Length: 379
Image (cartoon, rainbow, N blue to C red; front, side, top):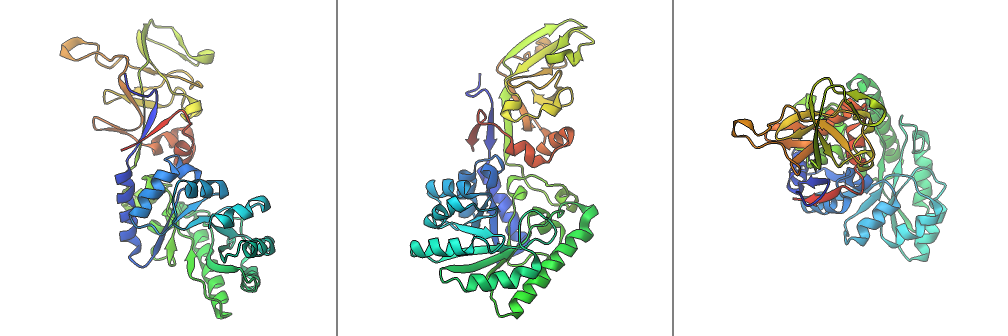
């Protein structure tokens, strides 16, 4: 038996290698901010953060203040940028932990300035501009007005300006993406023509870095590439990253049933032959998508085994009839055999992207959804 019921092996050396590939693409003069929000896309923000900082990343990006504070409390001292929205109650903590916020309007500027003054600090901030995402960010035509307000605030310092591309991974929306980038460039030009210097300018995530040549400014913010996850189109450009996560479990029970036997809740599957079923202690509570009932695959003994029946909260069942049964000198499939849900086994691969396609979700949904019962093991 394995040490854990279900676990995720995360290869930190591969994360460092993926960062090096990004460095080779963007060159030595472009800063790299690695996005580690959502607990490092499910891989562990602290461990990934330390790894990429040691490998040359300049900054870490997170979604909110709680993620940033957790990184600070783990001992990470490097610059951390909150990419998402702020709420008034957390401003004091952000400033006391020397975390850089992103502002999306001028609404919170007076409060940030007052709190920074109270703590006797000069707070660096980034301004986000909405060029077409329509989620967060100021209108481009208000950029100069907001920056003037920032410059007039004694305890605030504008460190960066950014936008968010909505379709950088979608070839069919390339024209819209180019319009977003052009709008951002025009806004930057207007700001600088008014005499404002902006140290950091950024918009390029993984999709833009590798599919829109020379589209980035002086900082990029990769997410998926670090984890070896293709957001949708990078592999089509011949770019390959090593997935750093393998999701594993083990066979916990075996039984053989006759033809005509229903399997799982609501009898969504009925055997059409004598079938050997492996029960595996992983379910939707662990992040294995419910949508993969009767559609998904797992790897056992290096062979693909179809999932039969619905995905339950704690278990899935797989048809292992075709695996060795002890004849011809081959050991029979047994309780305790390793099961690969994402990853590679004996040369056979089962990538997160394949599960995502079957479940009709983003690959990020798969890794971000790994539950707290899934032990993270760093190798």
